[in-house]
Image (cartoon, rainbow, N blue to C red; front, side):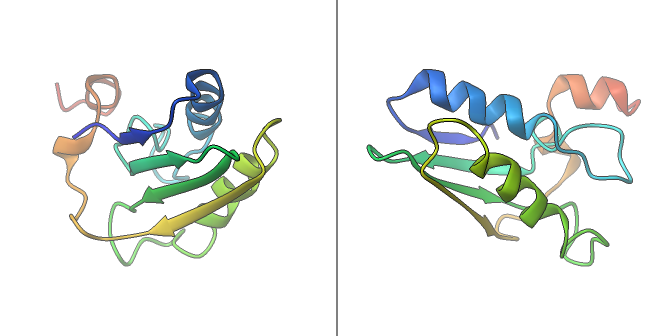
Length: 109
């Protein structure tokens, strides 16, 4: 399930994705984008960014630190007016949400 992207600003959206790709779950050597943890990116006409993401499990040890870390990095992107991360566990994350890149990196393919 690739992330749902709602925006007409493709250049800024690509910078958002590139920034997300610099964020890692410290227990897994793959970025959160390739892991399939990003469910939705919404960028409105005023460049207010809302990202819906999940974690590999509700009891993930980085649940308190990873979303705020990503949110802070997104706020620092030139052109972004505001950034907000919404954490969800619906649907639950499974390894099927990982990209082929992540599956190869982690030895699932």
